[in-house]
Amino acid sequence: MNNYCSINDIDVLRDWVDQALEIKKNPLSDKSLGIDKTIGLLFFNPSLRTRLSTQKAALNLGMNVIVMNFNNESWSLEYGDGIVMDQGNSEHIKEAAQVLSQYCDILAVRAFAKLENREEDYSEKVLRGFMKYATVPIVNMESATGHPLQALTDAITIIEHKKKEKPKVVLSWAPHPKVLPQAVANSFVEMMSLMNADFVITHPEGVELDKSITKGAVINHNQEEAFKDADFIYVKNWSSYTDYGKIKRDVSSWKITKEKMELTNKAKFMHCLPVRRNVVVDDAVLDSNNSIVIEQANNRTYAAQLILKKILKNK
Ligand code: CP
Image (cartoon, rainbow, N blue to C red; front, side, top):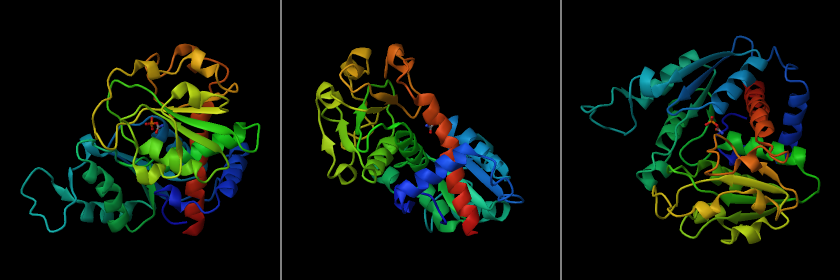
């Protein structure tokens, strides 16, 4: 494997999950694979889990890690072709990506949606810029439209915890005071299409995802009905694809409560984190024995380590 930028880079998901679970049993088994190799972690947005789990994964493989926060440590980048750079941006992605490729054997990039212009966000200019101009493999650490490391983690976590061959998995929208990207939800929906799951999406009318991504998925606008007999409840807020970048108001009834979880088949509660307590989900759910969010976050390391291992073995 060269890049890991979307779910489409996965060939046989079940094999990947089994390999990640083997890594989890013995994370230091490939300690010499990455010796004298360097990964550059490039952040255009904040992170806790992605930054530290990817760093931990690289260290488990014996790699060196360099981190750069582009927003306050580097030159601001320009992306346009043939542009006259007489405005604010100081350096073109063309040079930046090639230069970074001199210092690093793998580059990992986090660049969220700005949620101002859908076409621009969905053009993925930052991730695609690095894919185009870098001369080393690229890993997507959450781009404008996808979070494939998170989705691989989610698949690992569901397969690890499922008690039946085909569990019912519900992706539920929940309220949030700030407008949030669609990346995690997009990748989760795509991942569910690779899994043997009875998959249902529930959200209020007006916060639809991109129809080309949800095509073929069951969507139920009645949250309580969707929760019935679910084995996993995966919760996330996202902004509407059509009413792009706007907050959905008066939706506190979509918060995840103990009463709603009681409609399920003792479902495991999942969230990618960070999560706003008592806005998205009540303490009683997040602190319950059925919440697996910490284990889910732990699995971020093994998902990242699997990806880095595959790339290193291919080099
Ligand atoms: N879930 C996730 O990507 O967490 P961070 O934003 O903290 O990296």
